[in-house]
Structures are given as structure tokens and as C-alpha cells.
Length: 297
Image (cartoon, one colour):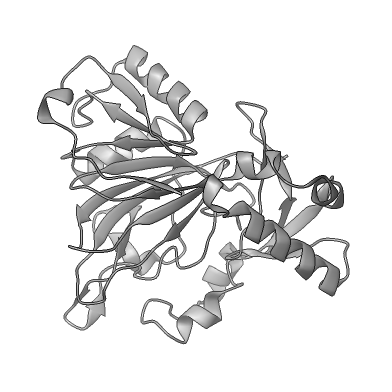
């Protein structure tokens, strides 16, 4: 597991655009780009290619407004609205506020987001292509985010496990961990009937093919995957536990240590992620946009 903590020198933040791979199982920094300005077609094409190659991009020192984050996100596809609408940024429903901050007795954002390993919105019929998370306030300690490369997890999966999951589908549901989270946090209200209708269980391939690169990746997570379709419950649980454990081995994982005004854009078709947590008394707030993807195959 690798982290990158070095501060980027200011003189690297000027053009021309430079993509610098991280010393990690995934990820690259994007330098020389100011997302408060329109991104030219050639630069956008390079960013798109780098996102496919590295699965995660770190845009450093992005002092951008929410509308600019939304506009850049939309260049990759339509945006998805999270079911917990009380945590939308005022005036910008496309942005989910991820925060542990409580003001006037009310949480301003989803404070336990990322408590379990997951791929965003895998519980939807069309799961997320990717997510962009822009740092607004960061704690003095903690608050890291871990990312696991599900391509390398598949590539290195023992042959007997590959045979066991070949051609199988698994159920994903938003509700898998929801009640457990409700019992210990102020961020999970009882869902309305309309909200429940938005998060009906779906079946997706255990091993999905990336629609743009053709690479295979495991597509199960401890947060949302409940069972492997067609297997007895005990066999399904044993197999999922093995897949979960293998997916997050250190050799697949990058730990992102946030810097001021970072924006991180990751591919939910290729990665899982986990919030490492921070002390409750330290403020943490980030803005997330989520881009709709394709039907997994």
C-alpha cells in the first residue's frame, strides 16, 4: 500500500499539461491544469486517456466553484443524484456533501460515507462510471481515502476462485449495511417508500469487462454485495469473503493523503474505495459528483 504526501511545487502548476504516474498500484497526478478555465479538447482527450490508463487522477490545487466541478464532471456523462437528498449542496443537487460537520444540531453532509469498501452506486442498474471528490475542509490528521485496483485483484486471483466466479452474477443493494450504519450515526434517516423504490436490488456480473478498455475487474464489495446468484447461502458467503479479502491486499491499494484543494477523479468500474476516518472533533468536508456509467457486462 502506497501513499503520496509530497507537496507539489507551485511552478509545476503551469502549462503545459503533465500526467505524472504515482508510485502506487494505481493513479496519476495531473499537473499544469486549472479547472476554473475551460479545458481544451486536446487536454481533455489526454485526461480521458490517463483516467483509463491509471484509474484515478489527482488534480492538485483546484480552487474551483461547485458549478465548475459540475460542468467538468458532465463532460464525461450525465450525473447521478444520490438518494439522500438532504445532503445535496444548496443550489447544486448534483453535488453530494461528504462531511462530518454538524451545524445548528444538524449534519451538513454524509459523515459516514465510505465506511465500508465499495464502488459508488454499484447498487444501481447503471452504476457509476466515476466520481469526483473535491476537498473543501481537511482535518489536521486523518481523513485519508484508500483505493483498491480491481483489475489487478482479478488478474492475481487464484485459478480456483476464477473458476468459481466465471459467468456468475451477484446481488447489490444499497440496504445491505444501511441499518447497521443507522444504529451508530446521525446521517442515516429511515428511508421513505419513494427512496426505497430508487434502490431496489440489482444483479451484476461478479467479473465485469470495462466498456472502454476491455479489461476484466472484480465487481463485488462488502458494502453493497449481498450474495452470488445461484449458490447456496453458505457457499456464496464463503466465496464473497475470499473475494473481499483478496481485493484489498496491500499490493492492490493506494492511500490518498489529501492536500488542500485536491480534486480526485476515480473510475468506479476499476476501483473500490474506503474512507480511513478522522477524529470526530476535526472538520472534514468535500464535494462529490457522480457520473453515470453503462450496464455492466
